[in-house]
Image 1: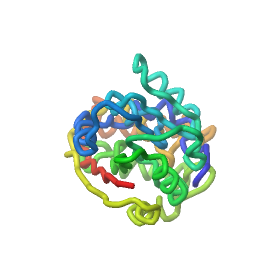
Image 2 (image 1 turned 90 degrees about the vertical axis):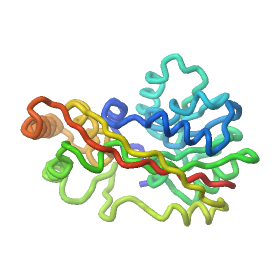
Image 3 (image 1 turned 180 degrees about the vertical axis):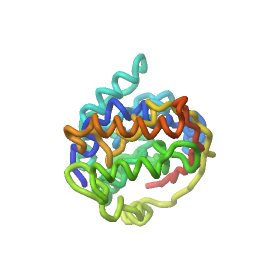
Image 4 (image 1 turned 30 degrees about the horizontal axis):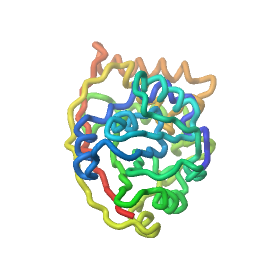
Length: 263
């Protein structure tokens, strides 16, 4: 999947609406654990619409978000509003360092598994300033661990349109996404990790937000449905109406774990 610019084609407008925002407690925990004091620079790799970049930007002199999807960066610029210390770079992670300089913190949040992991890990290690860290954020922001959203039925509906094998960009993922990132980081020369966690929380979502969450997934990105997207969305909304006529859903999100790696 590395280098495939179509992984989230058409998903940018849905991503921020359909995914649960990272909580302020995550930023506070990262600041405390990494000893951030407002100085230095942040590099958020595979930043999408800036979900984590914008949360952490206030703890740095400059925050740089890089992503291979130009539409995601357009959305990030829109969401940034008056935040002036953010810079958005249209770039494949595999093309780093790209003259971007040194950073106090490099972050991967729901992005590392899409990359040429050994290559990117080795590169970003060389981009860290002395005393810097790499933070790998383990989170699921599109789906809770329990609640009223009918995720099993939604998955079956997606499969009825796209087939039983998980789609992703121009290819498929019969065995899911890559795991074993700890071995990759250590092979690249990182030490650790030091892990800390942020508790899960209960969120309330509207039917529109649940629909946006589905279209924010690489496995259900709008381009995969082609001319059948409207028909799929109509069936999805009917499913949600049957489950909750009032169009309101509640679910408990899982905890967020962060692995802090030292170069």
